Amino acid sequence: MDAILHALADGSRRTVLEMLREGPATAGDLAEALPIARPGVSRHLRVLREAGLVDVRQEAQRRIYSLRPQPLAEVDDWLGEYRALWQHRLDALHTEIARGKKERT
Image (cartoon, rainbow, N blue to C red; front, top):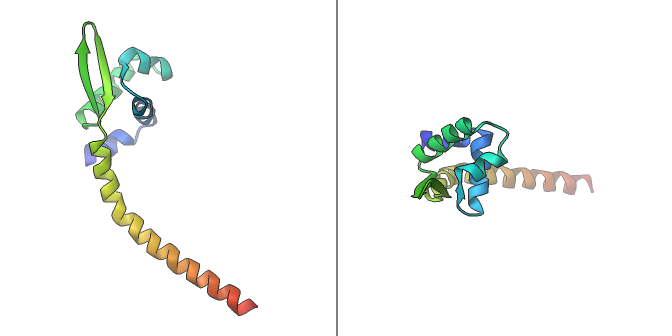
């Protein structure tokens, strides 16, 4: 989980994931969309690959990257517990606001 969160902490890596959400892409395609040099894009892709967020396959001279959504589902499950906590607190806040409005009328 730590590797996934570390990978998601960087804006460029999140941009890469957003692009791959639309479909597989080459490293060159991804590099064109980012304001950094190709070696930097390669480093970001390595971090994403090591975190299990992307797969890579070789086609002749090109590497094709694709999104692996399973690790993101793990993060979503982990965050679900916190969503439930906040939902409970927001429901309580809503109740207090409704009581305040009722008392004013």
